[in-house]
Image (tube, rainbow, N blue to C red; front, side):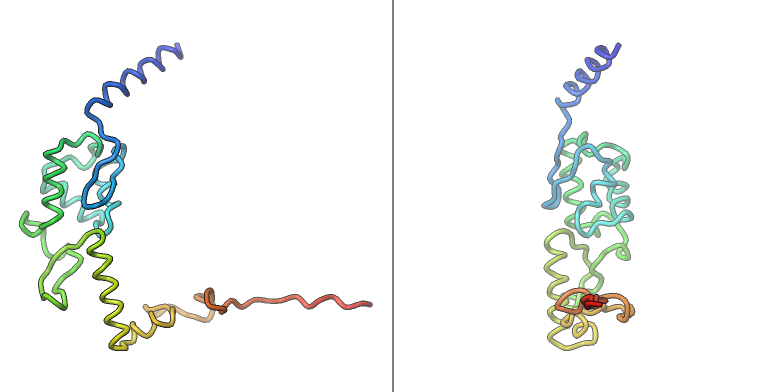
Amino acid sequence: MKETKQKKSQSQVSVEDANFKHIIRLANADLDGHKKIITSLQAIKGISFMFANAICRVADIDPNKKTGTLSDEEVNKLDTILKDPEQFGIPAWMFNRRRDLETNKTQHLVGVDLQVKLEEDLRRMKMIKSYKGIRHMFHLPVRGQRTKSNFRKGKGKVLGVTKKKAGKK
């Protein structure tokens, strides 16, 4: 009985391997083919659950479908939607870069582009010496967290109790 189950699972894998892709490349990220599309899209930096759901709805793809079963057309469609989501009717309030300081345009950045923009923002805050920039420069919490009991690690700030060496009686 166990042998027949093993044979069935091996035959299913071989049928699945014909059309199944284990890794899909989308927006400069490798997506796992065994996960659901909505879950694997969230592996791309800059895509949240809501945005992944919106992309799936616009592309007319079932969010619970396995990523490895996507056809090349569907992958290309997802890629074009990621490049310009505004063109496909995704609302602007979902975008992660609203009214950019340099261009004054609303856009959605993913992957390396998002990381570069965040680094530029941090560099600008440090240069103009804003409150947040100064907090970033000194590696302190930026959003109002307490510092008495947390954020003591790094750059020799570790505090603790040291035991005195036991003296002779």
